Length: 291
Image 1 (tube, rainbow, N blue to C red):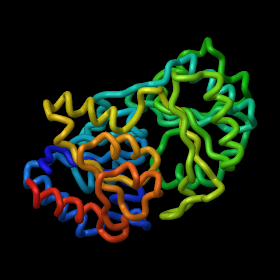
Image 2 (image 1 turned 135 degrees about the horizontal axis):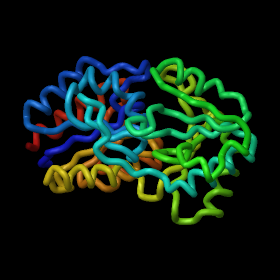
Image 3 (image 1 turned 135 degrees about the vertical axis):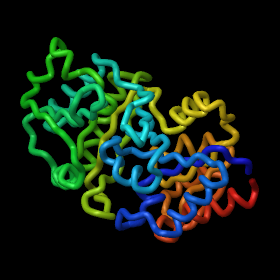
Image 4 (image 1 turned 120 degrees about the horizontal axis):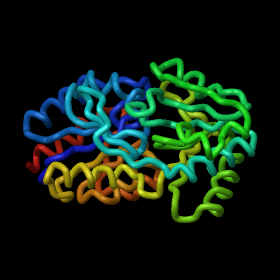
């Protein structure tokens, strides 16, 4: 498999269950880069939430963030490409979440907004988000009440990469379907178990994510390829989660780690060991054998 760009997910793929990158994976990334392969991280995290690991492991290059909604330069943090949600949809989704009794989390392009999250509503911040905001150096702003989402206050609706919330899975399934029915074909809506502590996921605590309909890791990979003059057939992808399905299905050569959900694994062309067993090192070895 001829590879010019190797794209790997972070949580559940490159990172082990403790959130660390093994020495074998670090060495494998160095070998791939020495062979002329560009290694790119593609994550559901915002840039601030993955900045530390990106700079520590890669130092330079690009990282795909927010599930494919943005592309950042690792060294200077500049957002070089992005897909934001239309402001009318931001208002609609926020009002729906707040109206159902939840705190809406509006993830911003912080390079333009000057902060990371706008939290809207009167509900308390959930335990999973409290932990997450403590772990990462995020700047948040808050505004309370459904009336605090006026369509006239454009600054609250600008630069939004993702609208979301964290709650019980059964509740979010209902809300997700309501929004899908109200705004068909204009949004991508997903929910899955949320990280609630280092290396763990909440089976009943889910993260709801709402993006523009064009947001997907594979779509941003395609845009990156176009900017690099690289054929999509020269991309290898590695992942484990729901937001990796597009890049696992789209790439000619893709690897699902052994801890991936069966529905996700079925989209990949190849399999790799678990994230705790140096999955990326396995993939790099396979790629370099065929270079």
